[in-house]
Length: 361
Ligand SMILES: [Mg+2]
Image 1 (cartoon, rainbow, N blue to C red):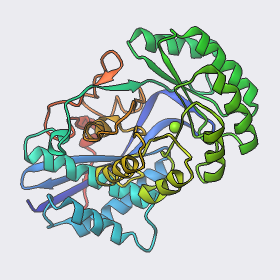
Image 2 (image 1 turned 180 degrees about the horizontal axis):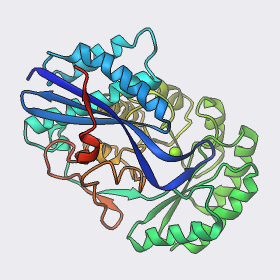
Image 3 (image 1 turned 120 degrees about the vertical axis):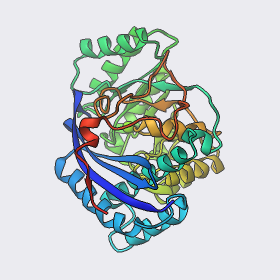
């Protein structure tokens, strides 16, 4: 199956609700879209940024890599992955470059599974299992009443896990908000918090000890993920599991978190791993360390990968970011998602986005 055409384009998509976390503020997702064609079959992949210029930069790298893939057999995915990473040797195996690899690698897996007329998780030897999913975002920008309204609305939709943001300048404000939400939610509903690396190590130690009393499901990225020692100290000083991994790149980035016992749950990010090929390596790395894996964003693809991981854990769902990108976003029922039986990844770019892609190779 020779790759005979690759198309690329930048698709800005308005978020249903603007975001604000400890480190991000945005109204749109800026997606770099790619479509790989081989002998009449096409696969699609996307990379996410929060800035138009960054999405265009990813498209430029995809265009460069596309020239190397043209004419190659689309099914030789592991070789193509190594080829693309090799092309990045001078500029590094992270950042914009790896996002471009991720979009292309996703498109190649989608194409491969479509050519076989099977869903991706079945091609990967996965299980048709329901995976529990947590809802969010619980942004810092919401006041307490808005936060409670959002959390209750997810409970009414059947979610049994809800994640809210912490990482405020004064962690005592976070404690008050989390306490209010914990008291309001059904006792059976699990509450997760995510500091998005917003606390200093001193504040994080104090905040996580106080939050430890509330019986949270997990505390995510309490400090910078580069502070492996601090994360390890925090994880050792509380009973609540610490989750981390979305901000590092590839298995190389996860290794120090494992070495420092910095997290009880790893949540590799599809695009920071360089696509499904790298995510599956990260999941095996976690399994060998005795750790469960969740995902970071990109649930429509990650659900297939988690279905193929025996150490899968509760999955992350970000509502309202890509609903206007895909024809049929995955349907979550009673807080659970089952990978679909449609061929490939099972979702397609909406035609108003797909029609804007231009041929680069
Ligand atoms: Mg997070």
